[in-house]
Image (cartoon, rainbow, N blue to C red; front, side):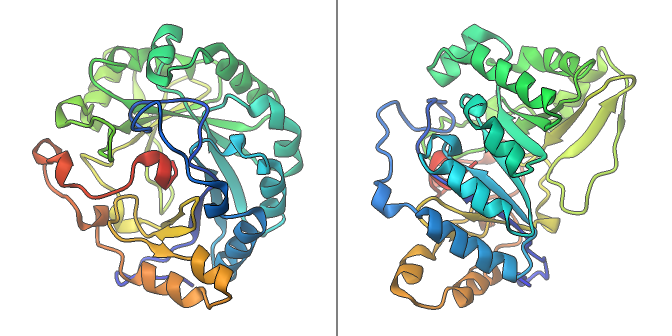
Amino acid sequence: MIKDSFNRVHNYLRISLTDNCNLRCFYCMPDENYEFTQASKLMQAGEIEKLATLFVSEGVNKIRLTGGEPLVRKDAAQIILSLSRLPVELSLTTNGVRLHDFIDVLLESKIKSINISLDTLDADKFKIVTRRDLFQQVRANIDLLLKHDIKVKINVVMMKEFNDTEILDFIAWTKDEPVEIRFIEFMPFEGNRWTGNKVISLEEILVEITKKYTFTALEGGQNDTAKHYQITGHAGTFAIISTMTAPFCGTCNRMRLTADGKLKNCLFSVSETDLLGPLRRGEPVLPLIHECIAHKAAALGGQFSGLFENIIPDTIHNRSMITIGG
């Protein structure tokens, strides 16, 4: 069992397969000409399986594969299938562009739920934020997942003066389709142009939804990062991830393994623990895992608290989101 000094049990591991991506979202990737990590410095398929197996032996029962875009890795199918044989709930976060190429793999691996990053329902805005004209392909792949009864969660990073007018459009999507819309408060990372006045808060989102809909709060799980709701009569649901205005750190059970084999005990942690180097040298890795998690801060990597409007982004020390893993 992996515990921190606050007695929080960590049984959920997020593994980034790559920092590469086929989109160029400005809040995730610092610039168009970003230099991706050399393949030799990334965890190889066998190394990912070894580390995942080690975490599972210590009580991890949920693994999520992330990126970058995990499905741009040439051996992504091999990795998915190998991890699907572990006694875990396996899931995936993707931008949705390549899902049609992997549908058979996803079905064989019995993945039941997939998160898809989609910040706008406007094709022109999609092209602006991603710098790629692939909106229709993503929408078609969402329909493909629903056709195969794979639960779809839509991750929507909310930003004022970008998609704040689309809240009700996303909610309308849940009327006839069993999707879960997950509104995410905009968070600060290296190079993502974050400012406090771009954040759309949980309260502001709920106020906007009440202008047209009546909803009820749903009971969440013990370690949920999202607050869940449902519109009366709708097939789908919506949720809000309120990292900036109402953090959920007290019940956090998550660990992040970056594509280059560094363990982060928090999305906002300053320090990282190298697992790949010791693994390749044949050194014990398990003590490093326990030591890393034992030093986890109480909240938000110990980097900020209080009013998000007072945060100075240049004082936050962290990687860019694409190198951490979504």
